[in-house]
Amino acid sequence: MRSTASHWDAVCAVTVVLYVILGVGVSTQAQTQIQVPTPVAKTLLVEPPTPLLPATLGKLNRAAEGDAGDGPGLVDANDKAALSEDGLRRFARSEYTPVVKGAMEPGTIAVYELGDVSGAVAAFDYYRKPGMRAEKVGDDAVSNGNELLLRSGVNVVVGDIKLNHDAMLALTKELIEHLPKGSGSAAIEPTLPQLLPVKGLDAESAHYALGPVSYREMGGVLPAEVVGFDKSAEAVTAKYVGGGVLTLLLYPTPEIAAEHEKQIEELSKQPGSSVAGTVKIGRDGTLLILTSGAWPVDEAQKMVDGIHLRNEVTWNKPVPLDYQTEVRKTFSLLVNIVIFCCLAFLAAIVLALFLGGGRALVRIMQGKPAATEPEFLRIDLSGPAGKRLDGSED
Image (tube, rainbow, N blue to C red; front, side, top):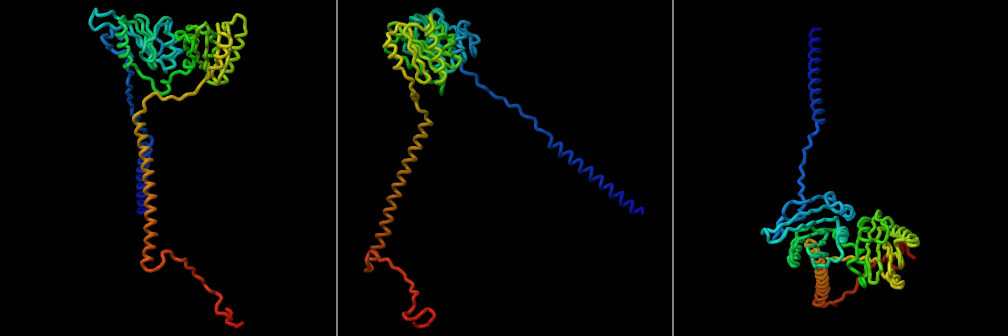
């Protein structure tokens, strides 16, 4: 009995030890599975955008950092609403002084970067004043004495520097090289200003607007709430010889254009309306055409009937080098395929002549005809005449 008890005691002790070992192992494995690696913090380096104004411009040095910022937060209070409508991204304004003191008086330059070219065109028209003369620099430019207004891509430059005309243009060209460039859809010119008929147009009076504030400031004939800027409308207003006014409105969809066409028609019928004179209204898809003012009736109708919204695709930029390389590779591949097919065709002809002609030549040399008659094999299953298959005679 003692040996049996000792035996059972040993078995129990071994079992307890195994349970302890297995429990420790399972616990360790569970802890290993529960542990989650600590995430490693990643540091992203963002390169700041290039400053809009360079430190040196010709023989001028930037006096100080000046005003700069993103959005319309720090621009003049009078211009804040209009620039917000045009999609201002950032701006910079600073005073420039001559490198040689006393060589010239200091001046001020301000640069406004818009979200796209449409916003830049609208901002340029907003800042443009009557009496300024056109300059052949940038995409559009006007000047009046020391004042310069320039549009280059998505940028609008307002300068006030006392320089002679040639020095001002040279300074402007240097500044254009420093300005940021638009790309993709942001670099597309707006369609609406290009639809204005050139004949009889007072180019100085043409103004393009993307919002109600700038539209009112530029002398729009319609109430801003009727135009529908809250529905992404675009507007251009221009005067023509004789006192006629032409208004073009562009909407995202034909349905929105038709809705505002009805509103304008109802407005024109009201007494004392701002839409007066020879009023003619036309619509071409998403485009509304409106004449007002001193138009002869036939000319007004002709103007409305002659303007159409056209869809054009233009390519005015150099083709990228990688695109040119791909085109060359594709062209080279197609040429090689054509050459291979021609060589394969010639090889087939030569091989056919060699095999067919060579076989005929060998037969002629053997005294046989060049062409062979087809030979047919026939199996005669009828057996000898007068006997049946079973051996009996007829």
